[in-house]
Image (cartoon, rainbow over all chains, first blue to last red; front, side, top):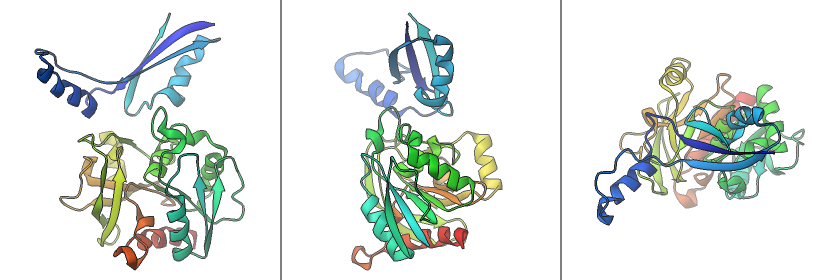
Length: 74
Length: 211
């Protein structure tokens, strides 16, 4: 089994209100100078055939219309 | 016209949808998500709620249910299919409708009566909306296709697009015109008790597809 991690993030150019909300909250906590915050998802899994992970992302883990994904095998 | 109303774990509007179908049509029955049996129905409503807990993305898991496989087959055959709210999200995830529904621009769950414009006849409908992920999105080239083909079925009236949907889009249909997705809830606007009965027009318009 191959351990892998899939990072899924909103596609560039699509309004990411979650990222914006986090960004707006930071100065109140004293964190200045942080910008371009984006919130995505991470999926950890173990796969017999890591070659098929791309297909898995396209079909289920990500919605390619609105999200980009990145597969990291560990 | 006999409607089938899908019921997933986490659906919450299937009873209202059932009642709306009974008022608008000739009868309706619930269809459990594990069933593929849609033989006795002429059209299907995929109702609102939080199917499978909205895990991963709203509608992402529901699209793989046996009932949805049967719905996809029916849709390809030209039968009317109406996806409301979560049902709209399911139909988009299933590829039966173009686009996707994203988190509301202001991040808040919105629950209020809204006014829609029927892009077909210009009629103004008053229908409730209640959702957290209702911001319609599609890439520019797809939007252009939708506009050119007349697939934008309903838009929020001016001042009513509170979720940030692109081009004020509240509802879209497929190229064949038999599959319709709508974010607001026509099934909650079918009885004079709740003032507006405009929701019936949505059911009636889709029923014509079957006729």
